[in-house]
Length: 335
Image (cartoon, rainbow, N blue to C red):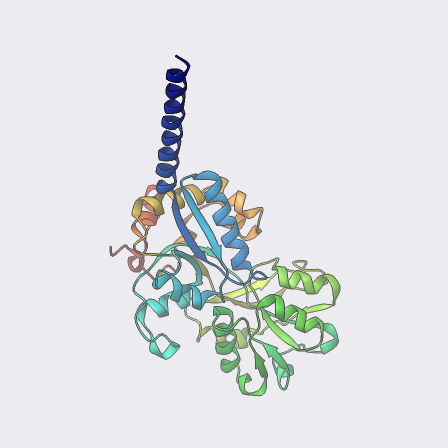
C-alpha cells in the first residue's frame, strides 16, 4: 500500500512540475523582446530611452524593451534600418535624408525600412565653454580645440554643418568625444569648447555647471539664418535663463527636432500597444520623472506629427487617428 501511494505521489509531483515547465515556457515564448538604440550614457537620448523602456515594462508585462548605448542619431537610423535595433531616437533631418538616400549628406542608399512614431523633442544645440576661456562669439572659436560630439552622432553632423555655414570649421581643432568624456575634457583643460546634447537639463552640462563657471555660446539671428539653411526642419530656439547654474541670460541656438523611429517589420499590434500606452499623460509623466523632456510632450496634440516627413508605422498612425490628429501627407503609412 505504501509503495502504491509513493508512486502516486511521485507521479503527481512529476505532472505538477511538467505543468509548471510548460506554463513557464509558454509565458516566456509570449514575451516580446525589442531593442532601442539611444545614445551615450551622458546624453539625453539615453535617458529618454530609459524612461520609455521602463514605463513599457511597468505597463505591458508581455513586452520588454532594452536600451542600447549608441553614438546617437546617425547610428540609430542605420541600426534600426538593419534591424539591429527595433526602435530608436533620431533627429528628423537625419531620418528624412536617410529615408530618401541623399548622398550629398552621406547616405549611400535609401534607408527604406525606418518608420516614424512621433516627434517628441525640440532640443537646442548647446555650445559649451568655461568663463575663463573668454569665448563669447563665433569669431572667438578660431584656433580653439572643440569636441563636436560623439563620432557618427547627429550632434556631430549638426555641429559640422553649422561651423561650415559660419566659415569657421577649417579654423578650429576638432575632436569627437562622447558627451560625458567631452565634459570631463573641458573641465580638465584638454579642450576649449564642446557641443553638448540638447534638451535641459542635460547631465553632462549639469556636471560642468555644478563645479565650474559654464558659458553657453549664443548665436545672432544672422548666424542662425545661415545655419538653418543647412539643417532641414530645424528652427530657432532659446535655452532659458536659469536652466543651469550661472546661466543668467537666455541663449539663442538652433533647434533640430527629434522623433521616435521603428523598423517597419515590428508588428502593427505591438507598436499600437506601445504607442497608445506610452503617449498618454500617465506614460509621459512617468518617463518625465526620469528626464523632464517627456513631460513637455503633455498634452499629446498635433505637435507630435508636425514636421513628420517620413511615413508613420501603421500601428502609430492608428493611435493618432483615434486621437483625431491630422496625419501629414508625407507621414501617411505606406505599408
